[in-house]
Length: 147
Length: 77
View 1 (cartoon, rainbow over the protein chains, first blue to last red):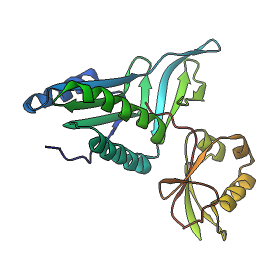
View 2 (view 1 turned 45 degrees about the vertical axis):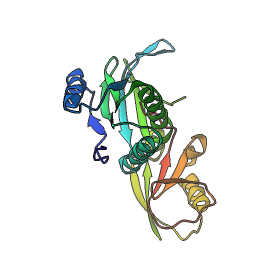
View 3 (view 1 turned 135 degrees about the vertical axis):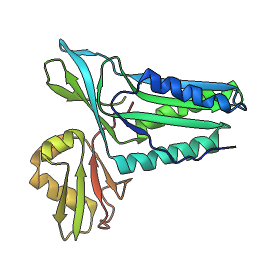
View 4 (view 1 turned 45 degrees about the horizontal axis):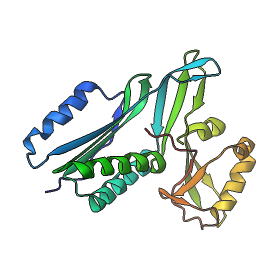
């Protein structure tokens, strides 16, 4: 049984460990699931020309991003035998060391969740119009670019 | 035609606004971009993709009057 796939993805600020723990707990009633896999993206304090990144300020083309998240969700359910999936991405300021992306995939068996999770994360990186302003400790900034 | 144009990230830093409505009598996306290069010369130094009605399009596509967005490199995650 697959659940309703239209959900809100964006969360204001960092994604807390309480929120992540709560998401895991909610799946205890779904007893056909035998395997979860989780990806957590964390803001790195990169040092660039002697200056340290203290936070990333995320913005997005939200209408297009939500459409693309929906497409990713549809394609993932089509290509992988998963029970459910959840994507949460931060908007606004996320400090170094905090979580900005939480992807959660569940299935009766383990192998598919490794593949599905990688597929989802890679598509988020390439398809979603999200922007990250990397703020240095001296309040100057540069723009993050995905590789 | 009146076209709503959205700017993001470093593009919005160049245009100094997130969104504007431009009245233009052009047919192609490329002609709109040429107009924007005149209005914001600094745009020529920036890398961006173009979305029309939330779908990425090439510059030789016709303007439909739907929303246009200038999207610099994505940085999700």
